[in-house]
Image 1 (cartoon, one colour):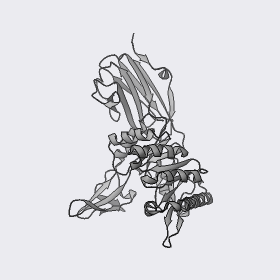
Image 2 (cartoon, one colour; image 1 turned 135 degrees about the horizontal axis):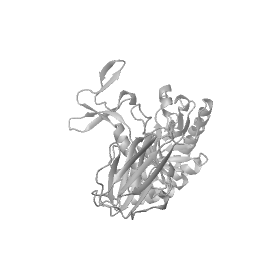
Image 3 (cartoon, one colour; image 1 turned 45 degrees about the horizontal axis):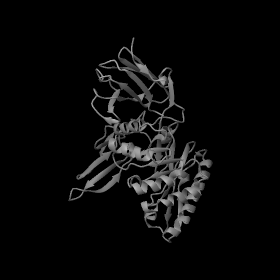
Image 4 (cartoon, helix red, strand yellow; image 1 turned 60 degrees about the vertical axis):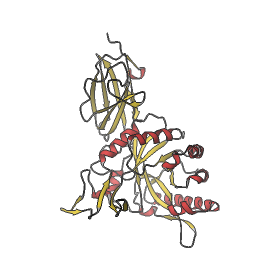
Amino acid sequence: MMRVVLATTLLAQACAVAPDTAVWRWGADPIDDTGRARLDERGPIFVQTGRVTRDRAGTIRCVSFAERVGVRGLRATPVVQLAGALARGYRDDELGAIVAAARRCADHAGRAFQKVGARAVGLQIDFDFPTRRLAHLGRVAAVLGGFRPLSATLLPTWLVSPAAHRELRAVVQSFDLVVPMVFDEPSLANLDVMLRRTDALGVAYRIGLPAFAEIRRLDAKGRWSSFRTIADDMLSDAATDWRVAKGSTKRLTRPGEELHAVRAEQLRTWIAHVHAHASRLNRGTIVFRAPRRDEAGLFASANAATRITFSCVARDGAVDVTMATPRGAPAFDVAVEIRVVEAGGLIAPPPPPWSVAHFCGGLPCGPRRADTLVLRRPVLANRETVQLAFRREPRSVACRLLNR
């Protein structure tokens, strides 16, 4: 008779909504029909529709391009950005004009969406205020609070200073969602720090992940001196220095330049790591562009009401984990946390594409000492079962689905 005790939540199949990866569509370039098809039925879509800026006469105004972004038929959240030069150089008595311009941008986006059969869902503001002016973010929320859900992007520097973090915690309570942004390629340790600090804000959040593709040039001192952004459709996951277009190849870089691009596998790792973070506030991730053809499974469909079912059964010194998605639902990455007592480690790792990470007291450690395993399966479709066999019969096993 096996001594293992299972958590009561495992006595029946558990069911949870999969975390989704939202999409940011940035800039005034229109979404073409191909891009619209890829965005359709994906997770939430955030589309930049306007910018608050100062014109040559010194007037603070809204520059709207909501009619040009091509949201026809989509359900999306308008994003209003504060121009960088204005964010760094406005007077305190100009904040009212900034907020009024943002409201005009938001109102115009709503009308523009309606004209083309799109639905505007709430509002997101991308206002990179200097840290010393964090309180102004709260004043913006007070005026724009009628747009729900209301969300805001957060600079990572706002999360670093303890004093700024305390002020930020008070300010963001007026928002329904916050999005700390990652601007460069993060390590998993850095993501963990950001997740903990964002959790402490007490507001629902997504982590904004980079997805850039750019050409960088070195100067005489070996520093990156210039950047050229390249179109996403110029790259596949295997691309290094070439593109294929209309049957011919064209070199992307010139002498002294290098291609730097976030690959699908990097995105997959970051997304899975964030989605595996256990928090009632964690709503998943948001990426700076739409998915490419080679990135199936990265952008889970909340709009399609995709749900994961899973079961975790312990017997004879092993744990059988079964995960499934409804037939016809898009594939996505999944993760399960398995807590064990005195198991002595796995006899063998799970077969690819399954993977497992080992933790002791929440920190990475060797497999034989681990009290927690995080089992991941990228791009799960339909139904799969994997068996984890332990060196010793564990005294207890408890499983928890990390996808939300």
